[in-house]
Length: 509
Ligand SMILES: Nc1ncnc2c1ncn2[C@@H]1O[C@H](COP(=O)(O)OP(=O)(O)OP(=O)(O)O)[C@@H](O)[C@H]1O
Ligand SMILES: [Mg+2]
Image 1: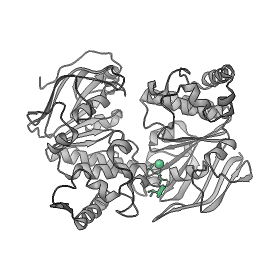
Image 2: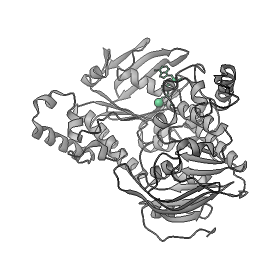
Image 3: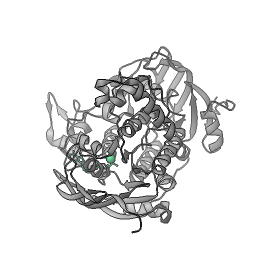
Image 4: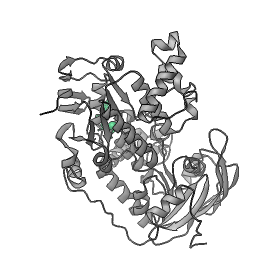
């Protein structure tokens, strides 16, 4: 190999009870390259990077940095060696300012020459396109800005290797563009970026080399220029992947949901939904398109009882259920695939089996009188694990130990098992690999054919266009338009999402 490797991980083995997460992995990365790490849910990507960042100790294997063997016993040691990691769930302190977060834990934080800190921060931000107000409190920032703070934090510590674990799944398309240009300027300055993602388009767009992991083993490392979408998908999944979905015509049923002149506030007490009205019928998928932060999150929360409407009505199955509790709304037949899956979707300490009956364990067949029937709960879990291909050592494993994508499958298995009439799906394929994405989209379409209604919130326009019957575009808490999906054009959608373009009325009036 002509270019020299900055990082070399050799024969890394990491076992957890019941799984070999990394099974003899060889991985290298060079100065000045973006190296994509690709693999299905549970393939071992996060684990490998946590080994590099000192969160886990490998059971076997060696790590070399610039040809020198190193041991990384903790993240602090990793940082001292010039290795930084931006996690999928940020670890900033919300009540502190940007600059306070950056210097947290550093000596400068104690002996505070704040002026020098600010100058260096401003220089880094300028050089790499990481604009963010240094005095703003972190809770005031958008997700994209918080990510920039995480990157700034690592760069401030002079890392040479920056690991990003699925950085784009929380970003809007514009923010993704900006992130990619930041990553490019980092490698032009000689850094190494390791970039974990499921999105093949992103691998092809931004990386220089790509390593594919499957079931804890390396399938291949190759220059991105030699890869294309079908070949990467095949390496990842071990079979051909279809990118097209079978989608029959909708058989419109009765009206399931009617939202009338709805208003609600966001967490900061500002108007987030500002007079929204729409209807959703059985047998229909209504896609809600929009750039994050335009009221989608608040809309979902109001519809599922997690946030109060300040005005307007929510009629579900012909009954006024405005501002009822999440429990009442779920009992009426509404399933919820939440956006913040770890926080809202499950109880991390409880087992897979328990999480699968979280909403129904008090009812037959899981309960008989005051007693839980463990046998029924376990056989239910075993069926769900098989049907939804949840990768877990056993039904007894605490849910928090599952990989990101498998947590998602667990939630879907639970939410779709009760034969819901209406499914509110927020970003249902975030963080899922291509195979699982294909499977989940198929499941939503099957629910639609069974007569359920689906409200699909997604920033992935390809997903919205391929699944929806109608598309509602949200901008600043209002409906910019309601389009028939078959006639909708990407460009028109983009304009409406940016608040431009003219409103169009629904065909259903
Ligand atoms: N702390 C842990 N304890 C037990 N098992 C774990 C732990 N961390 C990960 N695992 C298991 O190791 C395997 C690999 O998980 P890992 O998180 O590395 O996958 P991943 O490739 O990052 O997947 P995803 O794309 O879903 O995030 C999974 O089967 C997971 O359940
Ligand atoms: Mg992961």
